[in-house]
Image 1 (tube, rainbow, N blue to C red):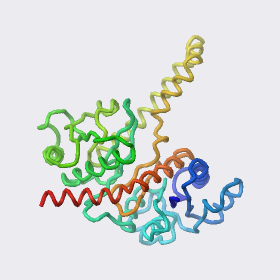
Image 2 (image 1 turned 135 degrees about the vertical axis):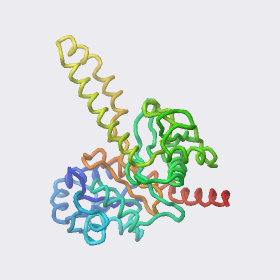
Image 3 (image 1 turned 120 degrees about the horizontal axis):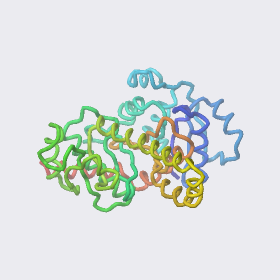
Length: 337
């Protein structure tokens, strides 16, 4: 049984959608137990509307909430009884295998490092979401945790991303590429130029060179390495463009009587196709390189995305990703020495 601590008070749709997501996760998977952290009375009031297994969904009272406009580190240190801090401490003490939150990204990142702690040898933990492509999914590392990354950080992102894709997603020998403004080795800013030869000579990864942004949706690489500023721009553009295109397609299909007839004929096929590009089905972004699993899901997550974020914790835990990351970094350090 995998125990996941879930921040019930974090996110735009908390606590109702978070709690619904927890209920859906326990209904879909028999090996998950969820501990909801937050205002006990509020959570109990919502849970009372549902029939659920009280042995698999429990509540830990956490009366404080960390908002998005608070300084993350200060909030983590001052609000010891917040839903985020209480849940992270459960992971630290081994009372939970993983933590999921749609709340303050800054607080989750700061709390993950300050409370749960980094794996020995990990310099900077990156946020790594899965993004849809024509060939399946790619892992974007980093999308928001380290805007001032150094070459050695990006090398570790590649190593940790490769381990995740091989063991969680099931892609053998995943292709690793560094996000760049051209395919040539001499192109890019100083960070990319300094990192390229390190990735090229790094043992244990399948480095395929640079990848331009236009090739990302085509699935030309399985692990996309970049610092957080670039990664966050890619992620937000990806989400915004996808939403805009779907809206435009819907508008076109409703523009005339003939278009509506055509829409009716292709509705099921179109719906099935667009499902693959629905980011909610891929869950949240794990903060790789911590001693415990911390997953940040979108702030506007609805119940389905929360459910998938909880479920993804099972494979991560069962495959012992943290142990594999630690062993991999140790072995590579030994080779370097």
